[in-house]
Length: 141
Image 1 (cartoon, rainbow, N blue to C red):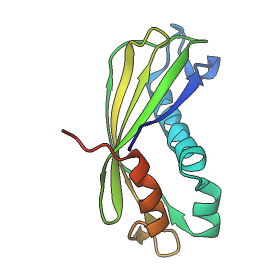
Image 2: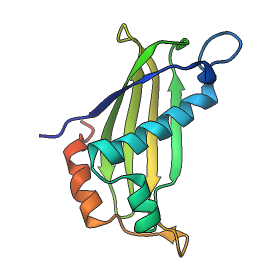
Image 3: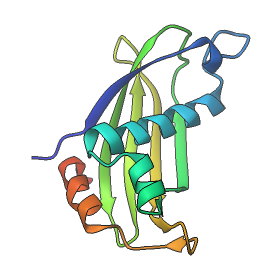
Image 4: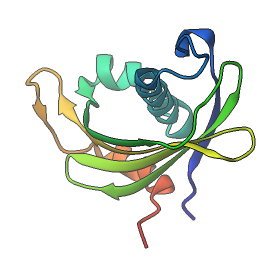
């Protein structure tokens, strides 16, 4: 049965603005780190192997993001990723960050494309990636 990929991230000083809350562009770095962690720990396909050895890139084609409450320095945020659609050369995932109290902090919809890094053109999702992604596929109701 499909399940989301879940992890935690600590809000560090480097993520924050002078008000002591996460500066919104830093969330995009945190999202990218989380996606990289999912590839490595969730699917067993480290970015290094995919990008350097197999020459397959995974750029973000689209990010739609809503910030629902501030996150503060030293908080631990729960990160959740659910794959919503697997296409021919791309997939869509929903990501959310939640505070220690379970309060939503961020919701994002990502569209990620697989790219042949030698040709710099989209390429079909590799079969092994598609297969591993199925474990996180939770189609929208």
